[in-house]
Structure formats: C-alpha cells, structure tokens
Figure 1 (cartoon, helix red, strand yellow):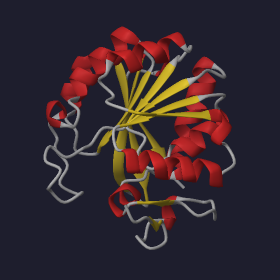
Figure 2 (cartoon, rainbow, N blue to C red):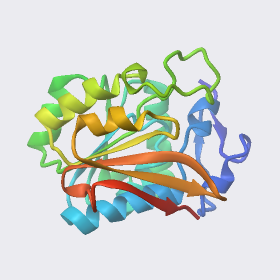
Figure 3 (cartoon, one colour):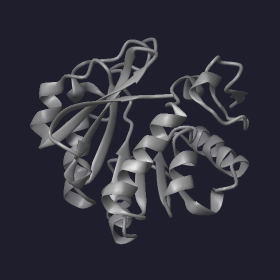
Figure 4 (cartoon, rainbow, N blue to C red):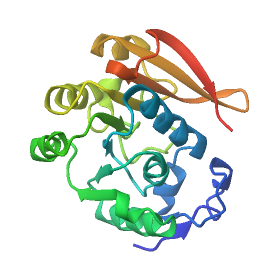
Length: 219
C-alpha cells in the first residue's frame, strides 16, 4: 500500500505536534484529534492510575502514540495489516515504540481479549468503524450502534465480560444515545471543536465521572 502523510489529506489541524504522521488516505482521514487522545489518557490516569490499556481498532496509530506518552503500556489491535505497519512506523517516529504492543487480528477474537486481561489491562479505548457499509463516504455514519463494524453492543459485551468494565467508546456524533445507555451506566461526553460536536466518548465502569451528559472542548 502506498502511504501519504497527514498534511496531504488536510488533517494537520487535528494535531499540535509537528512530527510527520503517515498512513493510507482513509486511515489518515479517520484520525482523531491529539487533544482528544490526550484527554482520554488523562481520564484513565485520573481514575485508574498508570495502568496498561487495550486500544481497539487502532488504525494508523494516531491515537496510540499519544496514549503511550501518558500510559505505561498500550496493546493496540487492528485487523488491517497495512494500518498496523503504518502505526508501527508512526510509533517509531514518536520514539515510543517500546511502550506499544501491536496486534494484527480481529478485535472479537476471544484469545486476544483474554491475553490482554492476563497482561493486566485495566482500561479499553474502542474506536469502531462508524459506517455500516465500508463503500459509503466516510461522513455517512450510522446512528444505529448495532450496525457499526464490529457491532458496538457485541463488542461491548465481549470486552466487559473478558477484559474489564472500564471502557471508553469513541463514537460518531449521531450515535443513538439511548442505545449506548442500554449497555450500562455511562457518561456520554460531547467532544467539541470550533463550536461543533465532532464525535462523542461514552465512558463506562470506573471511568465515569458522573452518569449522564458532559462535554469537552478540544484544542
């Protein structure tokens, strides 16, 4: 696969760092904001301390590299080998490759999840595919969380049962809030940039500050 860089796809504003970030075009377009990744890492530190974490659907590592700057060990899983390769290159660029274990595989594979639990993982960051059809434009996100890839309720059930209840689900802004609340007691946080809600974080377990709604303004 031919890689490009974050500047070529017009997403540099997602990051305060000047370091190069590479990947396939779709992977780069799907990267989260640096401040959002750091915000998640700080929430985990505040609530749980310096614990190992599992990142589900890590993509090109745009979140992984910032989680690893705050947390002692990140286990980052993705099914796409080319994105895992890009993520490893990005981790090396940021000088934190020794703090990350990349795993190429299906996030629903129970062997991967059980291994994460056995490695002492105490929190999970999940970023599923928000479209229900991968041929659709990236902006065509589904509000029905059962139709994300993988299905959010199915993933949540496995993560909660096999690893930990301390889960952050990074979800599309139009995700059905009632469906998320049915998964369990949670805090739904609006992630705001320049006055608009770009996506939401749904916190579960000990990561909840208070059940209900909250908001965070990203830099």
